[in-house]
Amino acid sequence: MKNLIGAMARVRLFVCVAACLPSLAGCSEESVAARDVSTYAAALIRVPAKLSYSNNPVTYTKGTPISSNLPSSLGGAIASYSVAPALPPGLLLSKTSGSINGTPTVVVAKAGYTVRGTNAAGSTTCVVTITVNDMAPKTLTYAVIKPTYYRGQLITINTPTTTGGAPTAYSVSPALPAGLTLNTTTGAISGTPTALTRGAQYTVVASNVSGSASVALTIIVADIAPTALTYAVNPATYTKGTTIAPNMPSHSGG
Image (cartoon, rainbow, N blue to C red; front, side, top):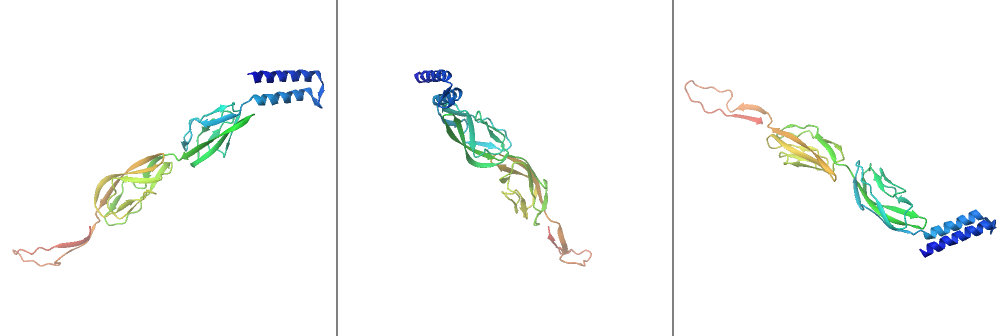
């Protein structure tokens, strides 16, 4: 407090003297007085220190508005804020309050962003670590929801379609009929079924770090049609009243 009073007294004395002397060292009294006031004012401002943020590190989701991330600091009041490198697309740093707001629009891997708070006496920094994940898948469907396959026949690959965020993994429960497989990366169902199945349900889940979507498939595995039916004796001649020996059939296919 004594320093502040002394500084103010010196400023008042200088302004008074300058008003009495039209010229001082080749400068007008206005410019000299203004420069002296500025010098003393700067000396009275404290350097800001220990800048921090309410959420750090932080993970956001693409397409979802974030809650304001607010700064705090010690020392002198911060007059302006800046950041380098630029925040992920869709996020903004307020140059006056330092708050971070917005809706991220791009998936961004974990990275550090240096926020600097500055006043006339100096600056302080804080590295804010930000990750932007993809949004969760919203819907999942397949080219054929209720397919009928045939034992021993290669199926047409059944491919999924999703909306929302891109899935990073697929799973199914219970296990698909014997001979069929689910690609856990693409979600495609392929293969050659080897066992008969009566209209069972199989739940496929598409997921990423933010969430998941699911769909129920009803899969039937039917037997193939029988072909090439023949009999052991053909043509056959029988006698009235005489028991015949069994004439056994054979076939291929189902």
